[in-house]
Length: 148
Image (cartoon, rainbow, N blue to C red):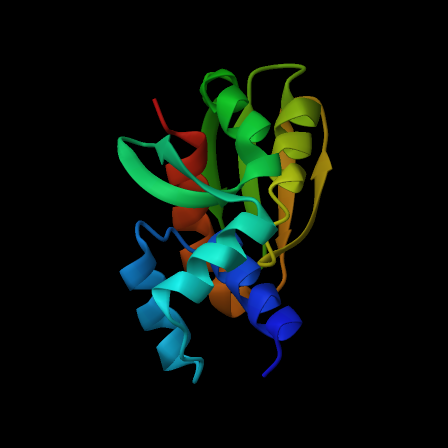
């Protein structure tokens, strides 16, 4: 595996999972058959712009261009009224006129488990990439959008 492939996988893991420390990331990478040293990981973090941030009372890694998105999280959480799902879609209910902004916020996260969103006035339809992952995606969305 070359450096580019390894860094792509690291970015994917950081974007899709809450990783709190380098040891945890080394463990996840090892399960995927990728062995890295702490020094290599530190260099990869610097090149990829991965930083530690505080969210939901915890520390986790994030890609630095997503820092602005985390700063608007408190605003978005006040616009969300509820989240529910069926076997094929997730529905996010918002305050009147706020669905477009919430949908844009969801889309900006570039979560690989989401194909896309469609916003009305007070409702956002979230189309999952796989119906098998709806429970996990629903949990992630509730944690993100109900972070009060």
